[in-house]
Length: 127
View 1: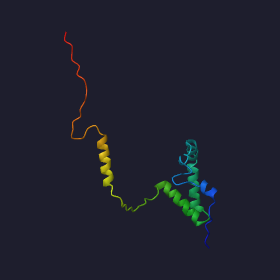
View 2: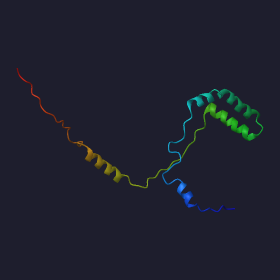
View 3: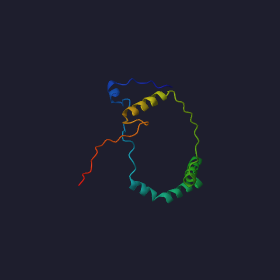
View 4: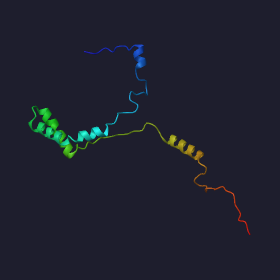
């Protein structure tokens, strides 16, 4: 059974997010510190509940989930390995050379020239 894709109305198309837009530009709202502290007050009782479910839970899934939660809190979650293969499809040398040229053009001196300090000589008055 396949779902047919309904055509969106012009009003729906206008209301949808445009490329580069987001519905939450500032990101997720942080949890208030008081809420975190209140939750921490229940750490021991909740751990006891997890242990109780792990040992006496009615079904196997809840017992396993509770056991994993207790284990991860005690010993930390197991390390996960990730294989990453990065290939760059663009030659970055031209961009880096252009940046070097741009930075050299902005600089007052080049590395092989000494720094020059301009000033005016003030002679001492003899008495």
